[in-house]
Length: 377
Image 1 (cartoon, one colour):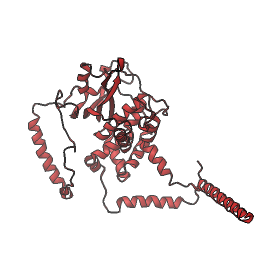
Image 2 (cartoon, rainbow, N blue to C red):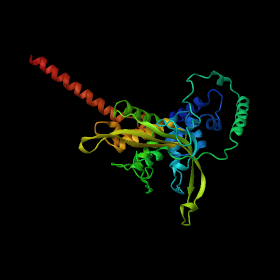
Image 3 (tube, rainbow, N blue to C red):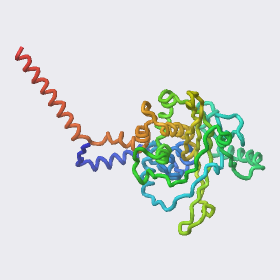
C-alpha cells in the first residue's frame, strides 16, 4: 500500500485539533471524570474490557477525552497500557472464589445458593425515565441514604459477600458433562507475541475477551440464527469480584503465601451446548459441550457471546465463517478494525491516481479500438 507525504498541512492539523477541543467544550460545561466513573458504569466496563486494562478512573478519562466514543476511548487506553511496565504476574485465580453480586441460571430453576438477580436491566420496562432530566445530587443522596438503611436491616446476618459453588459442578458430579481438566500451564500472551494459526485456546480466549462488544455479539447471534443453528442455554452467569494475589517478587513460596492486592469485577458465563453424538451401532445420544466467557466488569451480553464463539472455535467447521478462527479473531478486535477503517480517511493520492490513470488508459484504448472498428466498417 502506497502513501504520500503531505506538505504544508501542519497549521491545518493544529487548527483541526483546536476545533476538536472546541466541539467538546462548546456548550460551556466540563464533564468531570468522577461523574463518568460514577454514572456511566456500563460504558466504563466495556472500555476496560476491550482495552485489557482494569482501571475505572483511566477508562473514565479516556471516555471524556474521546467524547463518549467507545472505539476512540479503547484506542487511547490500549495505547496507554502499552507504555506500562509489567512488574508482576498474578497467581492463578480460581473463579469459584468469586464474591458473587449476581448469579443466575437459565437451565435450572432451583440451584444451590439460589438465583441472585442483583443489578440488571433484564426486568425493567424499556421506557425513557423523564424524571432523570431533573434529578439532583440532593435527590440522589436522599434515595441512597434510604436504600442503605434498608439494606443494613436486611443484611444483619450477612457479614461478607457470598461465595457460591459452580452450578455445572453438580452436573459433572452426576456424570452428565465431562469433568473440567485443570490446566495451569502458562498461557500464551497475545500482547507480547503475535497471533499465529492454529491458535491456542488461551490466545482465543484473550482475543475474545478484549474483542469489540458489538462484533462479538453480532457473530454470536449469527451462530444462533443460522451459521451452525446452535441454541445454547446459560448454565450459569455470575457477576462479582475476584481476589487477586501475587507471589513475593524475591522469595519463592507456596501459593498460600501470596499477597492480596485487590479485586477485579468480572462477568463469567458457562454455556451449555446441546450436541448429538453417534454411539455404537449408529445409536444417537444427546450430550452437552461447554462454552466459556469472562470479561471485565458487568458485561453480560459480551460474555455470553464470547462463550458461544469459544465453543464454535473449539469445534471448527469449514462451512461456517463463525467457526473459522482466523475469520473471527482477526475481525473482532476494536483497535485493529476501527483503525484500518479509519485509515481510509488518510491521503491515498498516489495509489488512487495510479488507479485513475489505469482507468483512463483502458477507456482510451477502448475508444481507439472502437474508432478503428468504425473505420473498417
